[in-house]
Each structure stands twice: as C-alpha cells, then as structure tokens.
Length: 328
Image (cartoon, rainbow, N blue to C red; front, side, top):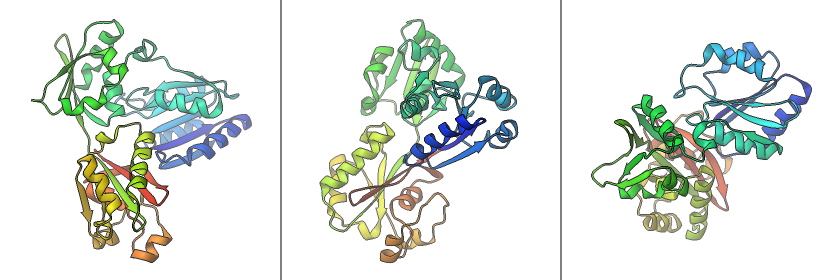
C-alpha cells in the first residue's frame, strides 16, 4: 500500500510526523510520503498515485480538493480525514474496497483518537460483500449489484452466500451472522445473491516468498508464516502457494512447513533472481555477499506470481524473511 499524508497547519504536521514514524515500519506500507500545504495542487498530482490519502485538516479543504477526481468506489483511493488536534479520524471515501474503514480504526489507535465510520453495513454490524472482497483479496464480478446486496443486509433481509467448503475459512462470526450460508463444491468462487442480484468473488493469487538462514528450525519458519498472515489479517489457508530460491530448496525447516500446510513450493533459479529487476525489491548486503543476489523472499514471490506486486514487504522473523505478492 502507498500512503500520502497531507497537512496544512503546524499542529497538523506534528500529527503527520507521528503517523509517518509509525506507519513506515508497517510491512503492509510499501511507500509513504508527507506533503505540507499546497493541498489543491498536491491532490491533483497524487490522487491516482496512492492507495490512501490521509488529510489532516478541515473537512471542507479536502472535500473540495478531491471532488474533481472522485470516480468510482472500485478505483478511488481511501481518503481519511483527521482534525488538527487529532480528536477524530474519519473514513471519508472508499471505506470498503479502498480499505478506509479498517485504516481509520488502526490510525485512530496510533494517535489515541476516536474513529468515525459511517458506512451503513458497518454501523449495523454487517459485513458488506465488498468488504469480503477487500479482506480476502478478490476480483468482483457484477460490482453494480453490491448496492443491492449491502442494502438488503442493512434491512435485515435474507442474503444467500454460496461457496465451496474449501473456502470455509473465510466464515468469521460476522459473516455467518450477516449471510445465509450454503456450501457448493461444484463452484470455485464465492457468490452472494439477493432478489436476482448477484455478486461473484474470485480469488486473486497470493504468493508468499520465504528466505531463511541455513538449517533454520521448522518452528521458526512456522512462526514467521503465522506472524505475516496475522498482520495481513488472513488465515494461512488463503496463501495460494509459496516460493523460495533454489539454494533453499532442501531447507528442512521450509519443506516441513509446506508439507504440513499441503501447499506447493515453487523453486526459483538463482539466475532468474540475479537478472530480475523490480524497484519494489529491497537490497540485503548480506544476501548479496553470500549469494550474489539482492534478496530472496521479495523477488521469488514476485517472479512466481505473474503480473504481481508486493503487498507485504520483506520482514525478518528470527532468521526467516517473508514477503507476499498479489496478482491483479
């Protein structure tokens, strides 16, 4: 995720600095940039270049600034508003698909303020079908029907949700209480239906890249995988497959975990990693010295996953490095 933090006043800049210092350490934040003053021209330049815009200012300033560029709930960035004293954090735009609602809650906890979320499904303790798509990284078919499904949920109508049993790991208590659940192993997607309006969700491909010290223990690899998934807020089952470099293809700690998870491990040749160019990949001096490549976990998950980008940057867990890519 790429985040821009905009501020106007000196007090707003103090909040901006605090958020930057916290968020820059987050594995889910690949790039974060601060902007101070010149809001109208800044928004014009960055609106379609960031996944989230955090605006620390009066609501009128940011609303008027983004108005010419707002296009669709499917593509607009999340916009989050914070007042100058950090009393309230408000999810302003793209609460579900853009992720503004979840980010609002997290940012409020960082600056010890009150989160304000106004989307109808959330305030009625329902989980919208677009929220399911966001949380589990899904493509959305028939997005125009989202409004019908979510309105029915808010009105306490019976909304059916069909899925194969292998995807039952998505069924949180909130989803179970929001939908009438049906298992159908003849399908390979998730389908929500109300009154002939349907929304179909298909999973994008998630690949986890793993690097590790020689002779790493299985328990440390397991812990790294679990910790990364916890930050991503997904079950381990949601990872489609794993990737590592061929120099790690016989690493018992990695192999035992892949076997236990019943997942596929794609081995990437070192020559492919050496020639791979992607500005998202960080550089490790240690790995470069040992193996002649910039890194393992980031390039392997990207190479293994066609047309993908990082959603979880390289993070170290006691001798294990993890990165995750998403296609689409």
